[in-house]
Length: 430
Image (cartoon, rainbow, N blue to C red; front, top):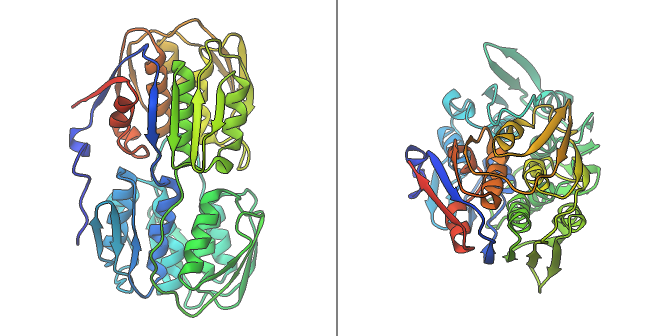
């Protein structure tokens, strides 16, 4: 079927990341294509009658998983480094295997395309990071509004709709996944669909551009009302994916935490404004250096900040753990409020093991900065918590052993190699 896992850092070889802290990061780092951008694009390839090509993809385990998911549906997937080719037009199953879906919540994104193309989709309740409940009711309500009959039982969701029809859909919350799933389903529905209170994320615009290149008619992506006029069929396309703004933000915070100075290549500063604003509040210097390039220079005296995670263009929840790691060494008290996920402070106990002074009360974290963190053994519980622990370890005194590195590899391409290129003392151990 043409799908294979990455040739380096395969899951069987994953285990620990060992960091010797105290070395400022310096140099240049190239930001990879967006994880959260490419997953819905690969799912959307199911809508096409012909082949689709993505010239450059990030080597991530989540990308491996979504490729295996669509391959299990009969689509031929050919990894041609650095890109990906997808046959399209050959869907012969409507139910991806549970063992794949349970690995990653984004697997639910194949439901909209399957329903639109095949009239039926059966999806096991998806898995993913244990950072709180992420209900999929908004996906299902939207599909039902377009005429799908939804049944749930035995841990599965089944949707049937011989014909999807355009509808006006209001999302109670601007869910990225629901907006993407409904946008894909509506692209082949009869008539016009309006998604109100839609997510505004750059990844939504990226998907809309992809669908439009395939012959779709999506308008208003990036605003809170998206208008999709259904078409009879979509064709294959060759299209790249936007840079990963969360990966970029993570390296920016790492530079700030270590007091280093790095240049990020292949970034879109307009996607990073909330991160840039908060980093500048800490005393970090950030300058644009030509198109697609940012210079980040850490301060010798980090300042505390107050921040609240919000849907885009607010501060991203996917950057909250990394910022908590940074603020654990700021000179004063910071207040962090997490409004998106109710269980996204799993990294706090691990940071406390390193000497951080953090108290959580419900969705609020109170961070009293300390002069230094101390290396020890910690465990990554999810993707962004793992990134936070790497940042803490880079700025700590002594050695830190981070287990659970498989979480980090879901969303950061060649993290260890990129950090070594910036002067970090970091390595993997099985």
